[in-house]
Image (spheres, rainbow, N blue to C red):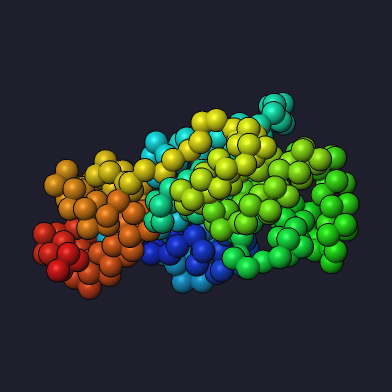
Amino acid sequence: MNLKQFITNNGLSMSRAAALLKVDKSQVVKVCSHTYPGWEQKEPDFIAELKQLGCSDSIAHSLTVDTDILVATKSVNDFTALADDLSDPDGTLSSSIGMAIGTAERGKTHSATWYTQNNDCAAYVLYVDGSTKVQLLRDICSALANTRPYSFSNCMLCLDETCKYNRRLLIIDEADKLPVQYLEMLRGINERCRLPFLLVGEEGLKQKTDRVPRLRSRIRKPIVVFDPATPVDVAAYYKAAAGIDIDRETAKILAKHAGGGFRSIVNDSIALQKMARASQLDTITDKMLERLCA
């Protein structure tokens, strides 16, 4: 049994397993995906440690959902391809500002954080509305260089030095909230430090950049658009997250109830998991769907 199956069978999330093991969640994720250096030894060591903490080899007798997985929808694949392109050390830095947009709940943040957890060539910053330019720059320096200079000039010196030796992609989430002046600052950093950015946000982000020719001309094409989740996407989620095959009608009901939003799909799966555990069921029944949609 591999580590991912062991974690799922014991009803743990990746975050909870990491907390029990006292390691970063990203390390557990990479060991599960067999991308962590020396995962061959880490995997049995982690399983043995979890057993000592009370976990078991026995298969769970009720529906268990791993909400940390990433479903490879078309939007997710397009996002990953764009991020790979921007972070490629041999790729062009011409128009090296990428953009991924979509309404709330489409899975943008999950895709961005998952990518940075699984790719050392990328770093993630969540823009907090109301932050000053210096606060944003300090967050960027922290993500890229693990330091937080106190002044604008020191932040720029840090970025100059950091980007001189190592090209990484910086993903900025909720970038639609950035004032245009901040976007102009990022454009300048992109040119001066040769630092590629991937801006993630709602549709208003594109409207902002379209109004400024210097910004618009530096956006890498194509722009990734996160579409609503389809019944096929829902079925893929339950296959990957719970290891079950749901029929077309069930997938349609769940997709409709979630309104195409992946966050709602995940929340619904958690609710269904609780119902299943209460009745010791390992699948989704019509009665559970009725309770969910009531």
